[in-house]
Image 1 (cartoon, rainbow over the protein chains, first blue to last red):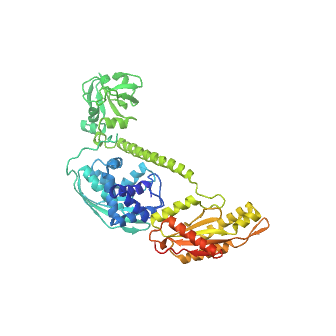
Image 2: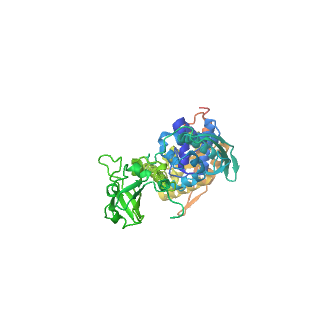
Image 3: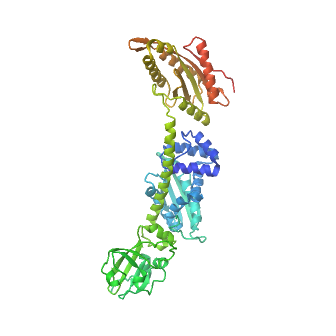
Length: 198
Length: 330
């Protein structure tokens, strides 16, 4: 598992629940270090242990934990650069939804071995979608749902999201999210400034 | 002319930064993004609107049209939002001969990040197929990644010098040293992992050194290192903490009987004679054992001290044996 993904779990716990919670989680997960490094890779089992320990500590299931992390990534002010990268995916919220299949490839454009979940979009009606995902740990659907909830706000869209259960599939986890795009332009927002990072 | 015509709206959608000019060099119309970057160009002379830096020629349309399809380096003299002391955005352009005048399409080059930020451009300012947006994505992603690498590098440099400070192995036996052991115990008790602790002191070792010399002593010590590595499981820790003193730590262990069996095995193996330079070297070992599960709060110092006391009990009872500490619940 790429350090960027591991680190987001750690940083989420540290910034929203405090460094002590992270310490307890990494001890419960028996991690042999104090912190993840964003630019290193870790065995999937270590992320899995940390994720499980965090979910247990917060008394949540893993999918809802990942949902909180997804929202946090898109709203935590110091992570503005990451949120901006999401915005490049589509000019409108619907563009973004229609590009969900590309998330993994887009991630690899930035970091070749990032290993984001694999998402597949299935359009059910003109406004309803189902996204199936595949990942080595549970929570891909939660991560997407959390991020999309925050991004819908960004785009001024009104959408309803529902997370299905995680199903064990071969070596990984298969999950689904259903998305109902109620109104694309629910309230007006400013267009995304492409050069806003400067 | 037959077939579909390219109307203004379409030209705007495909080339939002174009300039159409007539045969006399007067600008007739510009694309919406061009107008956003350098407003009010329509009706002006081309040479006032576009300054060609390379190749050397002026905004004279006759000269410009002599370079059709060629990539030009340009600046826009009327570019907006250029603050005092700032330079204009350097851009690129291509000119097309339309017979009765021509078309210049302006686009961003390496100054793209600066230009896009300066003019607050959004996706709507580019043609839908323009890869500039993907390039901006890559530039931002890359700079984020480079930042992270720089942070990692700082921490690695720090960690490296720290590591040099505390080399953790004993050269003679290849076992860990005291510093490594202290750190390991601190981590275990920090993480609340249960463990067994064994303190071993060799018996009769001093007489080997005294009788057969230090080379024989070193040979025996390195043999002890091999034995101790053999009897522990992967992930357990063995350290040489003094001349002929060793500490063994068995992680995730609360089984004192297992520790007794291991202690017996260690003593039996230590007692196998070692031949060095024709001499038969015989040693044994005394061991003190304690377990973190004996304590309510297992503090490494306390455990070390109790294992030490148990070790001296073994010595006092005739050596070549082990004793288990009985600290009671602390």
